[in-house]
Length: 124
Image 1 (cartoon, one colour):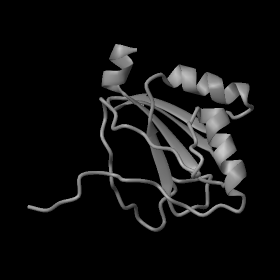
Image 2 (cartoon, helix red, strand yellow; image 1 turned 90 degrees about the horizontal axis):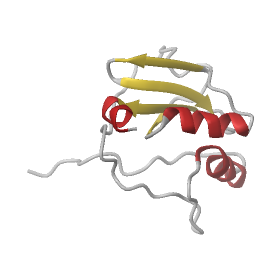
Image 3 (tube, helix red, strand yellow; image 1 turned 90 degrees about the vertical axis):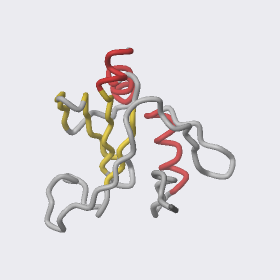
Image 4 (cartoon, rainbow, N blue to C red; image 1 turned 60 degrees about the vertical axis):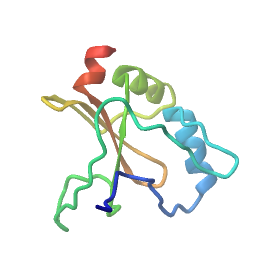
């Protein structure tokens, strides 16, 4: 049966795409290719979630964007140390039965959720 296999990309508008690409490269370590984007191999842990939220959710705050992007990370402390060195501090952090979470706001005002699944935490 034909079906969707997972998230194929995240695409969004930005007033200054070059500055946003540079921020992701500098703060989160993305390798941005000449064509203007990044490509990730599927992670060995975690999974890609698709989940619509109610229109009045506050989960994406303090961003006013109608969406949020989640990135799987292998070393939460290392990613947050890199972000901190660039002057970017998390808006929150949480550890629970799903793993470790932290949130940042990118220069386009999009809330970024970082997730270190339990499997990655155990292997780190």
